[in-house]
Amino acid sequence: MALRIVSGFLMPKTSHQNSGYATIELKSNSIVDGSQNAWLMSRCTYGGTTHYDNEPCKAISIRAFDGQPDSINLSDYFFGDVTGYEKVTIYWNCEDSNAKITEITYFFAGEE
Image 1 (cartoon, rainbow, N blue to C red):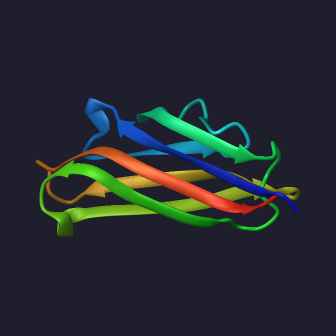
Image 2: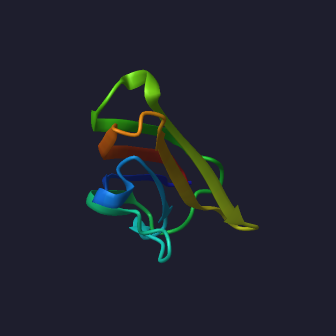
């Protein structure tokens, strides 16, 4: 089993700074077509080139925002096929209509 680390940060597009989502394909560390509510920046991959066998350890956080911290929701959902964990969708939503999320970081580490 080899260690695989995938990281980077998302910059929500102007029209999606209040709410949106992005699906990241973990094998290539790239945004899946059709979920382009954000740009992917400063991505980094270490280790092998396959999928995770089990759900990896994760850290997802808001790096920069304007608004009240208690009005922001951030969540994720892993999905894959019978071979393993291949993609993750990161969702963000601000209850305050004037709040804006400008950067979201992510970090995944696990065995492939």
